[in-house]
View 1 (cartoon, rainbow, N blue to C red):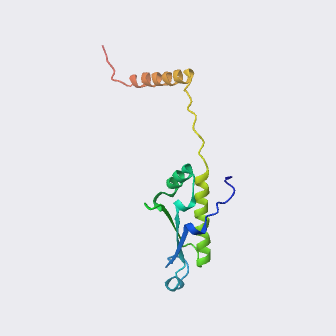
View 2 (cartoon, rainbow, N blue to C red):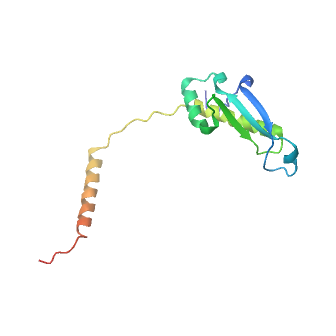
View 3 (cartoon, helix red, strand yellow):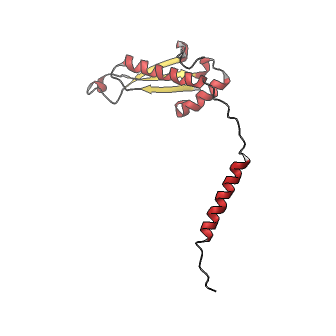
Length: 137
């Protein structure tokens, strides 16, 4: 899947609950439950093994032991805006999980680079040796 294409999360994998929110809204936050807590069952997504492991890594503490990702959105004053924000963040997280990391190719340090490193160390050692106590014989 190309990284520019957003991931579409199946509706049966999602569960939304609305909770009281802190943040902008004045007295409205005391009356209306505008924050959304979005739970996504990762096993219902049918991800490839590499994407599942990467998603687990990216989600961190947002993933429960039961395999659910919990995203709380409370940035906006309305339920709809918070719902869209949570779904967009979840889709972005899943899309990032599908991007495979490039394998690192091990390189060998050249002989000239090793020689330069050793020469630098020897030069530094002679400078430090010159700082020793002076013997007046």
